[in-house]
Structure formats: C-alpha cells, structure tokens
Image (tube, rainbow, N blue to C red):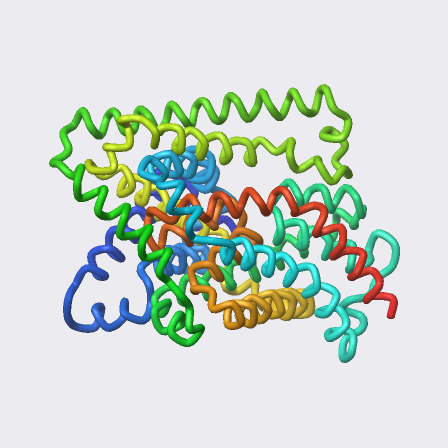
Amino acid sequence: MDSSPLFTNDAIVLGILMLSIALIFYSSSLKSGFWYKFYKVIPALLMCYLIPAIFNSLNIISDSSSELYFVASRYFLPASLVLMTLSIDLKAIKNLGFKALIMFLTGTVGIVIGGPIAIILISLFSPETVGGAGPDAVWRGLSTLAGSWIGGGANQAAMLEIFQYNPEKYGGMVLVDIVVANLWLAIILLGIGRSDKIDKWLKADNTAIEELKTKVSAYTKSVSRTPELKDYMIMLGLAFVAVGFSHWASEYISEFLISNFEVFSDKSSALASFSSTFFWMITIATAFGVGLSFTKAKSYEGTGASKIGSIFIYFLVATIGMKMDLASVFENPGLILIGIVWMSIHAGLLILVAKLIKAPYFFLAVGSQANVGGAASAPVVASAFHPSLTSVGVLLAVFGYVVGTYAALGCTILMEISSNL
C-alpha cells in the first residue's frame, strides 16, 4: 500500500500552506460573526500550526516528502531574525529584569527532574514501559529527549552518541519528541489568546514588557512612511545578505572548531553542540540584526521590516505544523504517556514559579519554548506577543544550547537511577 501523501510537489504544498495562511488571516480580520468569536478563543498563530498538522494527518501533504521546513528554518528564520531585531532596544530588554532568565532556568529544571519522576510514576503500573537492558534500556532513549527538550538537535545527537541507545528503536523516541513537544507548543499558543486572563491570575507585573512594546511601537510610528519598491528591495537585501553570511560563517566556524579542537569533534563531548552550524547561523543572524539597529537601517522598521519578518515566521509555523501527525499520538501509548507526564511536570513547575514570582505568561511561554523548542520556536512564540519581543526568545534559546548537554547529562543520570529503583 502506497503511504506517500497526495501531494509531494513542493510547489503545490507551498500553495496549500500559503492559501491556508491567507484564509486564516482573512477570517481572523473579520469583526463580527462566527470567526470573530472563534479567534477570540483560538489565536490565528495556532491555526497556522494546526491546519497543516490536519493536512499531514490526513496524508494530503507530509513533512517527510517536503523540503519546505528546511527552507523556512534555514533561510526564512534567520532573515526574520534580522528584520525583527532592526528596531531592538537593548536597554529596554535589559530592563525586563531577571524574571525571564528565572523562568528559563525553571523550565530547564522541570525537564531535568521531569524525566526521572515520569519513569518512577509510569513504573508503578507499567514497569515494562520503562524497562529494557543494555542498548535497549528506555532511559538511554529518553536521554535523547532530554537533550532535545533542553537544547536542540545537536544536544539530542550528543545524547544518542554518549548513551548509545539502540538505533533501531531511536525512531520511537523521535516520535515522542515530535508529538509531545508539538502538543505542548499548541497549548502554549492557545494560552497566548488568553494571556491577559492568565497574567491576572498570576498577578503578574507586565510593566517592563508593555514599556518595551510601547517604546518600539512609538518608534515605528515616528519613522513610519509609505514604503516604496526600493525600501522592500533594500530590506530583503539586508536580510538575505545576513542569511548568506550567517550560513558561510557558521560552516566556517563549525569546521574550524571540529578540525582544531577534539572537544568539539567528539560527539560524546558536552561541548559538541557548539559545533552545530544551526546554532551559529541563528547566533550570527541575530547579531547581524542587532548590529544594524545601531545604524540608519533601524528606520526601515517604519516601512514594515518586522511585518516582513512576521510573514517568514508564520510560514515557518506552518511548516512546523506539517511535522505533526495527530494520529501518531496513539501509536506508542506507553512512551507517549512518559513524554506527556514529563512535559506536565515541566509545565507544572513553570506555573508554580510564575505564580510565586508573579512572572508574566510571556516569560513562562518563551522560557519553556527556549528549552523545548529551541531557536526554531522560541522566537515564534515571543513574536506572537509582539515583534519587538522576538529577540528575547532568541537570547533564551541560545542559553538552551549552552546548558543543554550538561543539563541533559544530569537528567539522564537521574533517569538511570530511577529505572533501577
């Protein structure tokens, strides 16, 4: 039986995704009727994620036969980071205080302790689900989830190399990673539509965030003018020069580190994640945008730089949605259950600490995604609150790469101990 999707041509898939996004934006702009009420509950950004997920689940399109996510994450994401950091106000971001970092670290701790606690809880009624011996030991496989959910793909690969999980069973762990992380992302996006109510419940002080948004909005208004064709060409030129430079420089840095330092070339090393070209690409593109914010290029915010960046971000969200097969939730219920319990502990701890320190939902959402989603989704979630906040997501995601492997190692040691209790 042919399991290939109905449409495999990326030109057709691109058309389907862009039509979906266009219809979502049109229906969300209506000021009355069913859609007006619908989008007061369900954010447009979540629909940009869910519609492609439904198409993927119905086998109409599929990420497995498409290169669009690669294009979105490697070309459009760095371009959007440049365009959305053109108007960055570093001083105002500094004024956000330590709550953002506290929530990020809380998210990290939630992943570190969530794994072993999930193993203990599941073992009470299904010990075979968390068992296994040698390379088949489930805790070894779960180590790759810890790497992915604290840092990213490079950290995940490092955990696989260090703990030598059975490669034939690794696909099951990748499935858990995709399903649980994407379900949590959907919940995070759903919460954005209710962020005011959540902040009220948390008794959060949103003053610094609102000041940053107001300051950027005021600056945008002060430099706002009707854009000409040359403005779009210059903005896209700046963005994609940065994309090209970040790709070139990231490959050069990665190759230099791997060739000259054994600690970076050894995949079992805790520092191996710093040889990731994706990490350097995101870091360099962001630095490029920040650098432009000190020049006259900053005024291009007045001709819609962050709006173009948002277009790229929404397309990235749609391609992320293509990765989610809603039916796969039921394929391996035992492992999926471990992942859900694990993520629930992460979420519960974040909510508890946010309540205690009165942190806004923005810090909770971005702090979580900087861990679980990394550089691909933390800026997306941050920009959903306001384009001026995108850089906060990027900075925290970089922290995720830094602590990812070390925290994942600690988590895995705890999971091994928990498996042998």
